[in-house]
Length: 190
Image 1 (cartoon, helix red, strand yellow):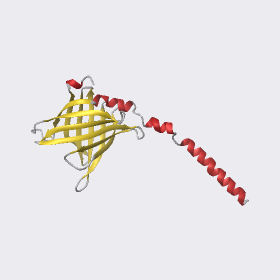
Image 2 (cartoon, rainbow, N blue to C red; image 1 turned 90 degrees about the vertical axis):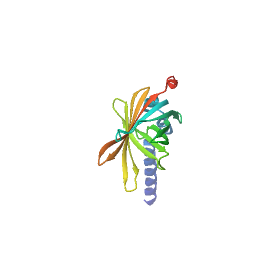
Image 3 (tube, rainbow, N blue to C red; image 1 turned 180 degrees about the horizontal axis):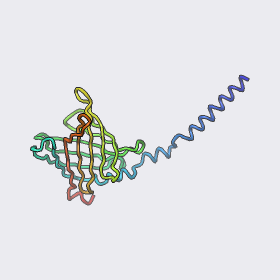
Image 4 (cartoon, rainbow, N blue to C red; image 1 turned 60 degrees about the vertical axis):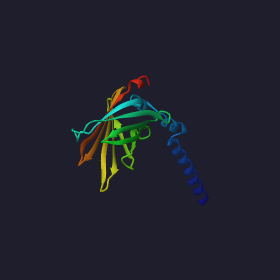
């Protein structure tokens, strides 16, 4: 009886493992998930050379800041890389960002780094029903507590998109920055 029990146990393990293996994604499934798709294509409008005008709604008397942004596809059309430069409140400002769509988690992902800090801002989010607005949320570690934030990209046309940044204070969105990107004439053919 002991021998038969061992064989039955072994058969159960093998059969169970075989059934479980059928539910796991195949190599082809993983490869398909790694390919750019329709959500990535929506970001095409953001690729090119743009002039940028930044305004801080909390400081309406501050003059707008002007800058430039070069956006290009990276890693085979999976991520839009943004390289931004401007004169911000009398100081040179540089930033690098990556925006893409995560097929596995069905969400947009974003990372931002700049010369004002040593931290990386990471956020995740979704697109609006009309597919013209991407809203991302995250939090950065502050001296006392995490500071939640929200980024919104509004794709107005192939030639213009608007970025809005909000601090989330006590559950309320407080807009801190608006950047309007307008495609440069020489990149209109890109």
